[in-house]
Amino acid sequence: MPVSSNIPKIILDTDPGGDDIFVLLWLQSFAKQGLAELIAVTTAGGNVSTEKTFSSASRILGLGGLAEVEVGRGVTIAHSPNDASHIHGNDGMGNLSSQLPDAIHSYEMARHSDDLLIDRLNAMPGEITIVAIAPLTNLAAAEKKASGVLRKAKEIIIMGGAFSCPGNITSHAEFNVWFDPEAAEIVLNSRCDLVITPLDITRRLIFTREVAQSIVQSNPHSELAQFLISLCEFMIGTALEYRETNGISGFLVHDAATLGYLFYPETMMWKRARVQIETRGEWTRGQTLIDDRNLAKQPANAWVATEVDAARFFTSLIEDLKTLISMQT
Image (cartoon, rainbow, N blue to C red; front, side):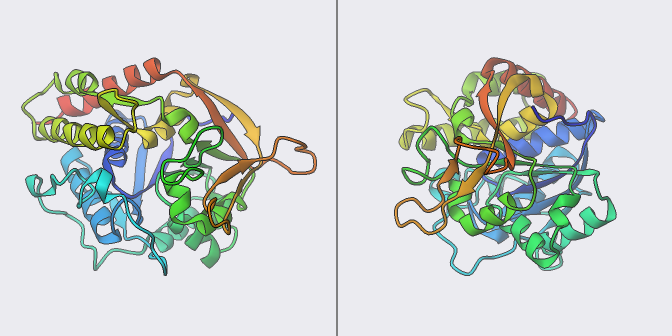
């Protein structure tokens, strides 16, 4: 299985998004515990527009106490498909943005995410882990602008794809890959050691009210605790409406699987694979495919998660987010 270091330097590429927000909060907990260094957050269009994902990332960094982290503005694509605001709210934050302080970072003054990626990877070759939980537009743009730059990352961990299960945006495609499959293809061709956490395992990660209550009990009246409870309620509502959890009262924290791998690798099992992207099919655009017939002829380019211990995963998530909330005044 892939190997990761104990104290990674991380760039989070994200399109907040309810589950993205839990990842960003979890990362801030690791940073405050001295277990990670959050180098930058690069935002992308996807769940909502680039302006809204930028604003959300800025607000959540302020809420978690890491407002000094740089935020990049997303690279736009020519023909952006429909977003996922019906799942995440018009602001990507469960329509709760008005309850939080204003964004700290300036969208107009921010560097574009691809330029930020190129700059940091060139400055720290072999040191940065990219956690990519959005459509891969920014990473592909960086690779097109500076060929080979993604190989300068220590590791790239991706939430995306669906292999032995249906997609969540079409019958074949997972949202992040479907949103910009051409970008996904560029990233998949950029190196041979990508780490992928697909829908096959993330569909088992159901965040419930009980999980939320366990997290906030350490400081239930803090602004962060109140926001977390409200976001949980919103996400549970849309998950049930769109039948994402088979009737279980909870929502899927797809993106958090990436941090489960990075900090608690014992919670997952993996297979070596050659992953390819369908970019042209009328009904299968964005489909992720594994050809298991002959890896000698089709060299592997990724590790793909095949199993997850959901109970151990959530035990770790709860304790880390409890730590972050207990630090709030």
